[in-house]
Each structure stands twice: as structure tokens, then as C-alpha cells.
Length: 110
Image 1 (cartoon, one colour):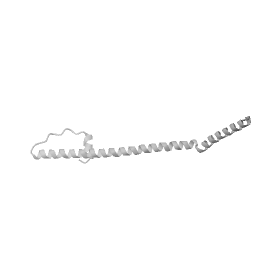
Image 2 (cartoon, one colour; image 1 turned 45 degrees about the vertical axis):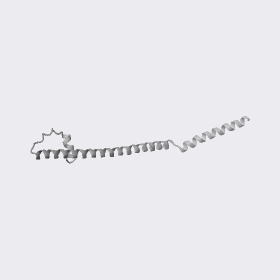
Image 3 (cartoon, helix red, strand yellow; image 1 turned 180 degrees about the horizontal axis):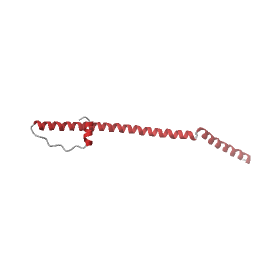
Image 4 (spheres, rainbow, N blue to C red; image 1 turned 30 degrees about the vertical axis):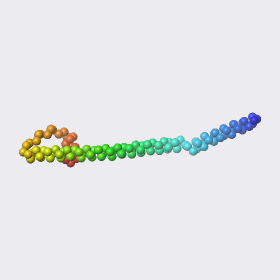
């Protein structure tokens, strides 16, 4: 091959590489890459929000179950106190109740 062929081959290769870079730059702007990053972050955050919503629902169910258990225990204690009084005895004095407990028992309507 003569030198002219090598020059033409080199120029053609350089032109092809330059066209590829220019084509990619035209197709994928920095702004488009930022949008893609935003979309990726948004999808990840949406997935995390969904996980937190599921966790919140589980916690709400747990709190509801605990409130029901406490209500049962309060009713049971009251019925035992009523039974003791009906038998003609006096039940032992209850220990003092903290304000947090009093507020919570009032909150669950017992």
C-alpha cells in the first residue's frame, strides 16, 4: 500500500471516530444524563416510600393489637375487683398510676 492509501485510511478512521463521538454527544446531552439520574433517584425513593408505607401499616396493626390486649386486661382486672367486692372482701389497693399510663388508658377508652 502506498502512503496515500494510508493517509486516506487514517483520515476515514478519524472521521468515523469523530462522527461516533459527535453522534453520542448529540444523542446523550449532559441534561439528558441528569434527567436519567433524577429518574433513577426518583424510582429508588418511590420504592423506599412504598417500603415505609408497608412498615407503617404493620406498626399500626401492631399498635391496634396491643391496644386491644390492654383493653382486655383492664376489663379483666375490673371484673376480678368486682368479684372480690361481691364476695365481701376488699381488693388490694392499686399501685399509683403514672400520667402516661392514665393518658394512654383514657385514649383507648377503657
